[in-house]
Image: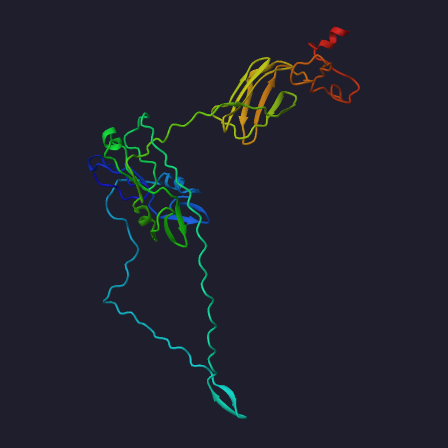
Length: 350
């Protein structure tokens, strides 16, 4: 089957099923500037080369096997090219004293200084051995998935063709190197100038097994951690902050109950924060919410009454239940008259 020549696609296709929306590609060339990599036709920029190859195309069209447009050809032999020959300028006349008489002529050319003897280059440090990752043959592979090894490009067809004894995977075990306009791989000496030619560089290592899914990953042991938390209140809400970095927003769970909040947060490296928090006063679960940020999780709980919370959790030492929203400065810290809610326990002490 033919191979699509569009940048970013380069997949095999069947002309019978080729449609106007079958190919997703980049119509313009790549850009490498100050460590960032991307395509000149779209604005996304990444750092690693693997992320660059995974950037989805920004244009849609039909697959094609026509050669890509190249740069303008060099002038043919029929075209006349004017060559201007330059001669070195003659040295200016210099007056030289000979037996008390000035003689004009060229100054004597000084002899070149003797170049230092080349020293033997220092012995290069031995290269670290590259540890090859093997594919887990027990994991099924979807048809059409591309080999994960750099420079291979083969797609999965069937167990017999893609994982059999006659399989040959030719790839680059090193990393891409871009230096002063040349492009190549750190594992082999060949360097090219054009990016299209770089993608066509054949691998320098051969193995009898493709890498479609990788080795089986060991499950990390989950670690329960403690995260600092703080709170403040307004007239109608309690705001609780859990200071946890890089929390997984999709798996974060905050369950609101009338007198309790259950918190379950997952973080990178198998870390997890769990907390069952009893509340000082009742809340309205329907009016409560939470938001996952980069460095913390903000939890907003709507009060079930207008009572000011002395503490976040139930406490026997709390003896002040003033109300918010009173006029004349009463009911707040420093007021002369204290207004109590009707359900305040202080009424029982009178």
